[in-house]
Length: 252
Image 1 (cartoon, rainbow, N blue to C red):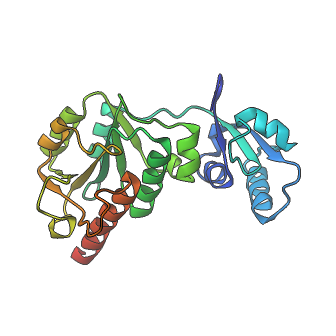
Image 2 (cartoon, rainbow, N blue to C red):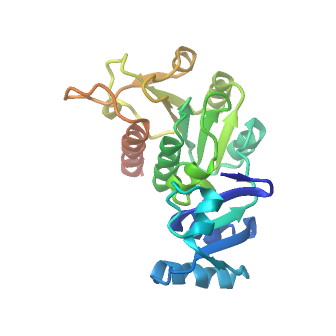
């Protein structure tokens, strides 16, 4: 949900995350009058610490701000826009890395719920950047921020004009590009995920685009033993990222 002065953030996790990490981004905060539970008290305490005065309003006011069908949990904030990074921003992050790269690349993920879930998992796994193409992909919407539960404010998110070119530049920087595909014999557990790494996952139901797959150094698949042939992209991302976490922790 957009606003002429920024965008709305809603839900306890998402609003608390901004208050904790980037309170300077918030310009207004609304809290439902009837909320007086522990989570609301914690939010109010943090707001007071950063000199933000919440406006106590009715649920009807909150529904009008973000829509009646939105699960705002009784809290809505107005945040300044924080646009996704671009190619130059990504190059700067690469230059400043002091440990092996660990990136997640999403090729055409359009469902904001899936992007939010991927950001949340990426944050938990210690991913340093999530990269997506500008076209035919979800951006940092209010729904994405709500589902990400604060991870949209902590995980650097980059949208690039030409994903294939970006993958080549990552390779030139010494990063191994591993894509997921059903059209390969190697499963994720046979791959070496310990070095500088970018895991590439495709769109819901379609998988990697041909050109994206061609720019990967290797392709892996998740072993499927039942009748289902593919998993939701956010589920696949979680499995792949945490296999990488396991291998990297074992490697020391």
